[in-house]
Each structure stands twice: as structure tokens, then as C-alpha cells.
Image (cartoon, rainbow, N blue to C red; front, side, top):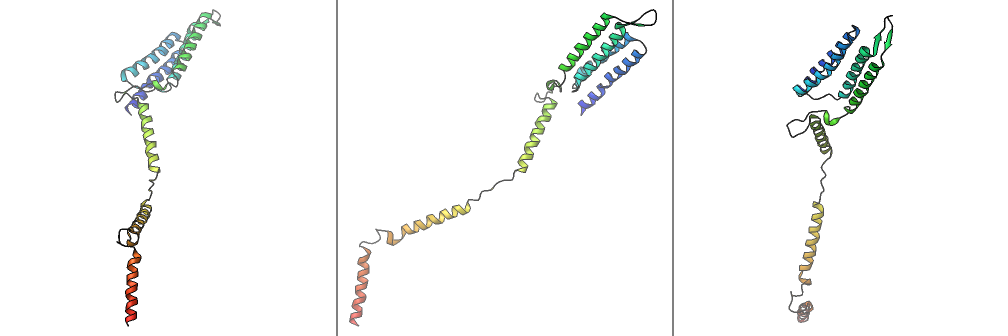
Length: 207
């Protein structure tokens, strides 16, 4: 928030320079208009360094604007001369100098356009710029939203475990039945069953 206020106040300097440039240009003070154009951009840079405010994302466009104003002032001051009959004559040297200034200003402005590493100054908190902090916060917010949207999945394994336990218990009971245990009887089971049958047969005969 404080950085935005500093940047907003800093825009007053180039705006005042633009107004002063066109005012002096209309008054015919071409040399003064050149001084105002150069001083406006330089004072604005010094303000950003002193106040430690971040350069705006349209810094390249502002450099191109002030370069155009400077080349216009040079052309009007040194590229156009009024003759004795009230006519206008173009000076080749002044026009070429204004054209060179315009070329380098446009080249410099294009180099400073869309430069993400120069958008925000590095702060002391973790070495991250303000823009990088915004990216990190945005990524964390998106990850939190994704985790909230995903419903937890519960896999019920209780029934399967109970079935396994019942199968194990039944198989264990079948193995422990006395009929399946070969050590339960000293003699084969038929021996005991035959004695009971003989006793019942003898009792029937006695009656």
C-alpha cells in the first residue's frame, strides 16, 4: 500500500514536466523545453531511488515519451530556422541529431518494457520481491482451494476382515473336532461303536 502511494506521488513529476514542456514549446522557448524534458525524467528517477519506490510497469513507455519530447524540442530548436523573409528553413544537422535522440530513446524504452526482474525492488524479507510474494500467495491459495474441493475417500475393510476371521474360525473348528483328531482315541472309532452295539444286543436277548 505504501509503495503504491509513493509511486502515485512520483507520477506528479513527469506529469508536471510534460505540462511545462508544451507550455514552453508554445511560447517559443525551445531551449528551455529541452531542459524541462531532460530534468523531468532525471528528477523522477532520483525520486524513485531516494524513496525506494518500485518502478512502474510502463517505465519503457515513459522513456519513449520523454525521448520523443526531447527529440521534438531539439528539432524545433536546432532543426528549424526562420529566414529573413519570415519563412522556415530546415537544418540538416539539427534534424539528424533529433532523429538520433528519437532512435535511442525508443530503443531504450523497448529494452525496459515487460522486464519482470525490474518491476519490484528486492526487500529484506527473504530476498523476494513484492511481485514474487504475490505469486507465492496466489499459488498457496490455489493449492488450498484444491485441497478443500477434494473429498476424503474412506475405504471400508471391516466387512472383509470379519469374513476372513469367520472363515479362519470355521476352518480352525473343523480341524479341532474330535473326529478329525487322530490322537483323540487310543483305538479306532469303530472299536468303541462296536462295543456299544454288542451291549445293546445282549440286553435285548436277556429280555
